[in-house]
Length: 346
Image (tube, rainbow, N blue to C red; front, side, top):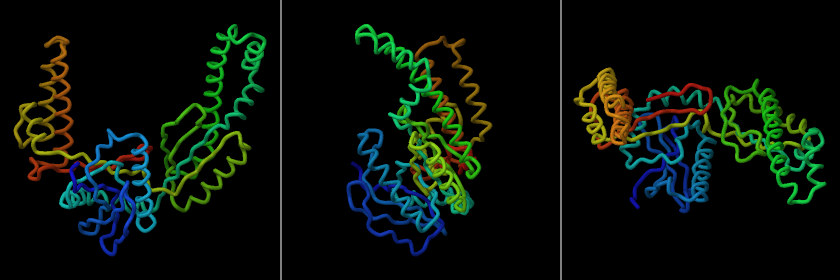
């Protein structure tokens, strides 16, 4: 493993008296510390290079929880714009490049971040109660269940398959209605919401909610009201306040001079180009690779995919930089959201 990498947690609007002390980072005791540029700091810890794509699921989850825990500890003292989990840099110089390139974006965003928090809400059916309710309220399910009980296990195989599909159908409809009820109750006190993946058919929703800090108490009361309304049929779990993982998260893509030169050569371009030049060269190259001209061959398809990738790389790079990188690599920064809010780019 390569040593000397930096694991990135977030950006804060402070540069003095930042001391987070010893903290557990992954499987080792480490130090979380700031690297500053002007009045901003990026919060990092030292780490060997980690390929998160090859990490086992349990280790990946543990690392993610460590990452979130550290960001939440920083949040106790400073508003923080979090980095996407797995963001790495190699040197302090690269960290300062991140802060320099994103300086105006981060400066304008931090006051907004400081006024808001995220809450995560998970709503799940109580298995016994929801199936009992479906049996009592849906005559089609009840009739099929009674038919199954009158037959032997072998004779009732087709009916059991039909019952399973029917239960899924009714449960899906009920889940949709309950989700609408929950969201209608909570929407007034929030600014945005973000759907996360649901784990199974018993999970009604798994969502992040963005709200101003002064709305925390009202939001919590609404969740408690819903919890009482459902009388245990639905289990609600509320976590927060959290940093704005779902609504403002810094993503970094590192771009090197070699990649840029290769992409320029593929599109037949020189180093000093405009976005219009890149777009025109892409259209000409893509037109020459159209299946009507080349046939629908595997080689022409692969070449077309390379052209698309080169176009996207150059567009992203030259939107920020106007010449080839003098450094070995430079960051392309985007502050993204999975909710309904706008994203910022640098």
